[in-house]
Image 1: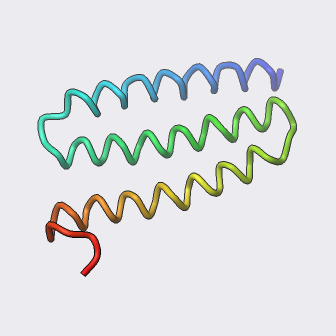
Image 2 (image 1 turned 90 degrees about the vertical axis):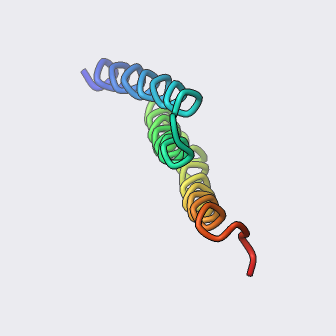
Image 3 (image 1 turned 120 degrees about the vertical axis):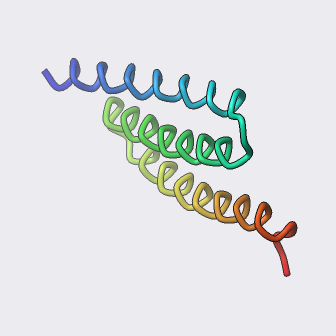
Length: 89
């Protein structure tokens, strides 16, 4: 039963990544593209965690944690670049 639920979840997250990629390339404004990229990072983290649950390996969870930290910092850097024009003051 859990394998069926994990399979459905992997398909749903992969579909969400596909839609996020569409918004990333089609987004009318730069802010839309940044939000789409941040959402793609969140969906990638979810996909990594699901793969870790399917395989039962702990390394995937550590990779998801590292991607979460990098994704947070990159979103803040993108937003700061849009507002001020530079990242480092």
